[in-house]
Length: 124
Image (cartoon, rainbow, N blue to C red; front, side):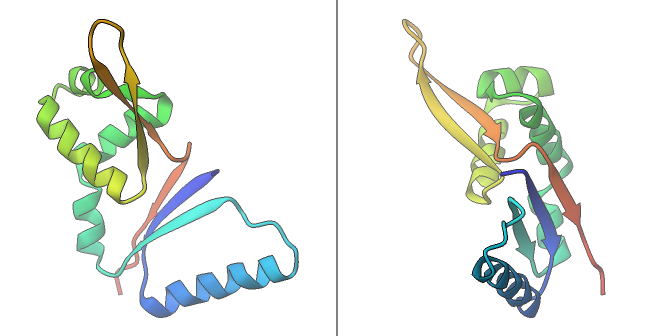
């Protein structure tokens, strides 16, 4: 996927975007490779994308990192980083994978789902 768009939108806006994508697919045109994550309430969007979570996203957009590496470079407790990562993964903004670290258990690696994330909020 080329990018993720995080925006405010209402239900009719969702159906307009879905209808447009369906029409493009019906015509055999390529889809743009982006995913839209929409929130009806701008406050809900900003609560998910808090300052700390945006810093976390910027780190994993550059390169995949372990939770321990993220905790160290962001100067945050591991438990707080883990909690934020779980929320971002549920929202579809990151993915994680477990990897065996011989002799040291398992590490969880985290990466962004796209190299570009656009955030748009419309206050109406």
